[in-house]
Length: 91
Image 1 (cartoon, rainbow, N blue to C red):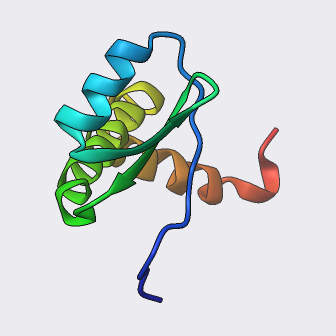
Image 2: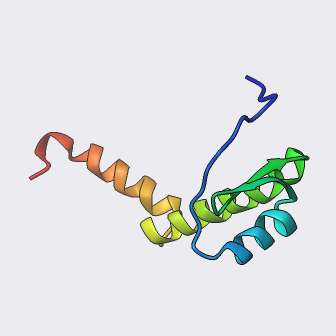
Image 3: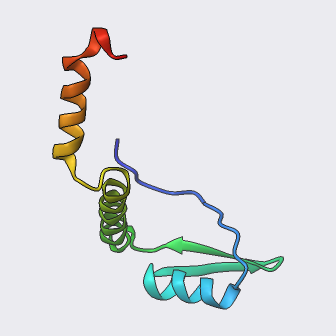
C-alpha cells in the first residue's frame, strides 16, 4: 500500500512556540490555518520526515533491546534453547 495523501492529524501541546519551531524547523511542515488557539500544519514534503522517523525507530529498538536483554540476542537465544531443552520438566 502506498500512502498518497494524509488528511489530518492532531497532537495536543502545552508550549505553542516550541511546538511551532519543531514542526516548522525540524519536520519542515508549513502552517496552513490557525484557529481557536490551535495550528494546522501540512506536510509539504513527506520525504523529509521519513529519514528522521527511521533514525528514531532504529534508536528506540536499540534502547529496547539494551533494557530488555542487556547481554544481547545471544543470551536471549540461550534462554529459549534452555527452556525447550527441559520443557516437559520445567519445575
